[in-house]
Image (cartoon, rainbow, N blue to C red; front, side, top):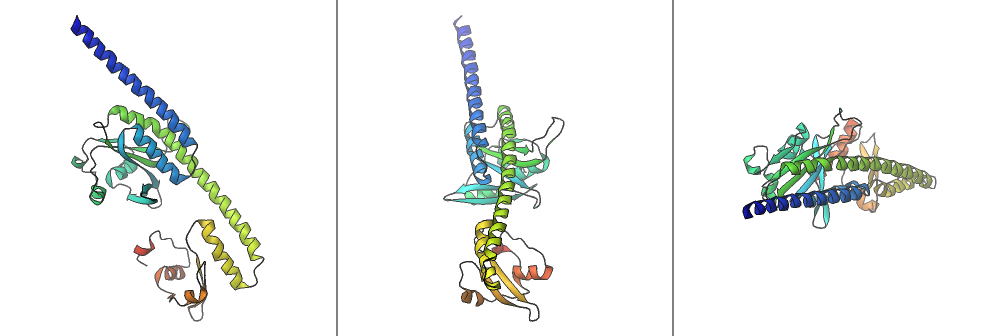
Length: 292
């Protein structure tokens, strides 16, 4: 009789623990939903999502990668000491890259036994990845029959109390829809915010240019305004003398013009040379490593 009572008590305890876990998960998901809906800034949102999800999944680390279709890459922002650093991965490379390409959910108990795992980051940081749970975040759709395109990849590392389970997969899937909506809202907010900044810049430019004394004064006003409007550090304008193929004048924000003119600029070399040659815009996100 005692044995049956003990078994029954064990079952009751197990069920109670499962119920407590589900209640905690439900409360956490409600809190996450409220928190995510209140943040629209993309960088803050990425870090906030991962803080909340990593805590809920009882994991050591996590990263939310955004799909960059034009570059064929995944990118994310991570907090590193006192600054926010951007990281990028090629779609199809590593676990997150594989998920971005295929859309499948990957649950790995031992990362180093999976040929898809790329240990490069572990080698650089000294961190040791054991277990991985990775899934795609899809754009919200109107009907269940439709399947939204993959807009992000969520990767969780090293569950603290063992390995990731099927229940963890279900929990992450449930969070995925909330995360997708937050990302779409953040993207729309970013588009509207950029449009508002563009209109404000054009208005201020028109106002300032109407007060300019001459062309030099006008261009100097332009380079002074652009960094703040576009959230960049510096702006440079060079005027070309087509007959001599030389820059006759240069304008930059917060730089002495005499010092600026003393710096040698070769018309047909470097990034400026590429722009002159193709007569079109050129984008480089890592000028120090740019082949031009």
